[in-house]
Image (cartoon, rainbow, N blue to C red):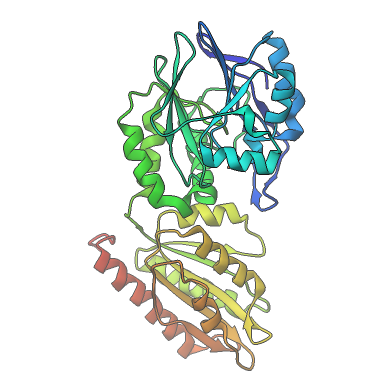
Length: 398
Ligand code: FEO
């Protein structure tokens, strides 16, 4: 990443990862990502906010050289995950007088994961401030976005919020500032779905605190900087709310076409009732798209054939993922086909214990669907319509 001045004496100098396509060996990154670090030069002290993923260390080092930074007093670590903290040891090597400023929990994690010595730290607590002279850093402890040690830094005079992962997006762009809100909405929602959604309740509380601040700019540690903070704060407010939409998400897998035929039939039946349907063929789909769909939906139906007396492993993966991501789903069901029996329903429903869902009677059939089976799928579609109507999320004409 080139060095960008984002405000007087504030530079963005992290790294863009154009080619990265997988994070945590799990999360697809179709548009790459960035690891944003920020250099704040006060009249007396200089602070670096977060660093970069270790494979990108040389870019951060080069950018510091480009800016001729001969002194760093504070390295603020908002989050111990290595994509932001992993280059702290290198920065400490380059600037041996620098201190790592963070909260006690993050300090412990950085000592354990990066082997940074305890005497390199200054620990702060919620509401503490550090002066750089004409600039003041205020620290807001904000646990569980998405690790237990996370915090946010607010640069008071310039009104810039540095929330690290919160409000971020996995989006590699050459311009440090958001150019087009439509371009970032989906990547930011995908980021929320994959990383933040399991911590919706904590984030809701942090949002209330953030809304009390007079913020001019939000500078996250992934993706573009927001000059219009309300855009992303409002989007998060919507995503973390308890409101669900009149949508049924159908992750499914089919081996010989029977389950696929059931899915196709159910999709049509739901559409005819005015319900938005999003089917995801698990053999083809990008799991990030499935995660995004789970952010707002009222209901999920998992479709699976029986394999070795249980659900297909791809359906197990989808159930595990949905359960781990803890979306605000209200209803769940299962459809599928078997050859000679199995325990698919108990296994899948038993995997959804994190979700506060009511299980709607599944439709599990023998072999290829027949007339009576289609009637059962009509019944399932009717059940979803009835339940969604009870929630008040269905248009009156349906
Ligand atoms: Fe971008 Fe949780 O690290």
